[in-house]
Length: 335
View (cartoon, helix red, strand yellow):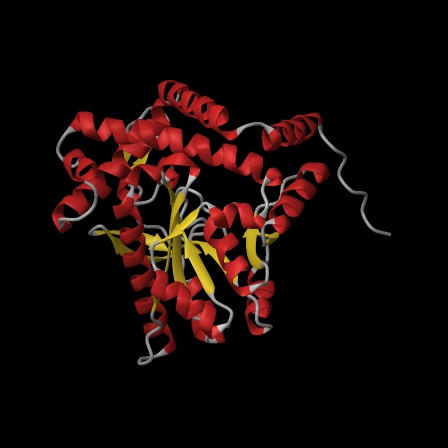
């Protein structure tokens, strides 16, 4: 006899009802409201602001040293006022992401794709012509699901992606159905490796988010000149199945549009299996720098510890906790 299914919670019912309402309301006033909420959030969450400030300062210092990225980011490397503008914008973009998640139920696949301006046409053409499954690696950045939706549209099959399931059954069903409508087949985060590997071998694409090491299994990789643990899972999938890795992003532009990029990260052909895995993970990390160079303020992953020497505690003070790759698993994306 199977275990009884969890009952719908009051909180889940309210969230579900709110999401349904947001899905049918006009977008422009909702975006304005979300940005206002983001400004309030910035003022009442000093520890989150401190973590974002530390992370974004490092990104901007790295971009300035490399001589790339928007002028506002390079200026923020040495100008505290410019840096604080990026931190405030980061809160606004994070709030807009939550709005986008809530409105997913009112989207359709064609509508999402119509908003996307492709900025890497040669890579997109190669994906379309090859008609083979791919591995899409992204970051906690801007509209995180749009690259998956676009690949689903391009290849004609749903992209499998792991997510942490919520306890409320009605809310969970809504997450599954709303994403399925736009071509994303979500699976439970726990034990996601086997179904994702099976999907690739059966000719389906998969998507992972790789800028936060949430299980303590990451490899130390230089990100803007400082080591941070990066998951080797995408590289392992590519080496074991032969599927190519594409790094993707969809940053927000004016007028509700997105600037989308998907570009190939070549898998090394020489070396031992581990050497190839390490090198491919390093190349993915370099691609993350390219994503952040476009609009670092849209990286809502910046609210979380990324570099071990830039962990901020609840009082906004920095702590050096060292690089611990043996930590027990924590909730989050598959690694």
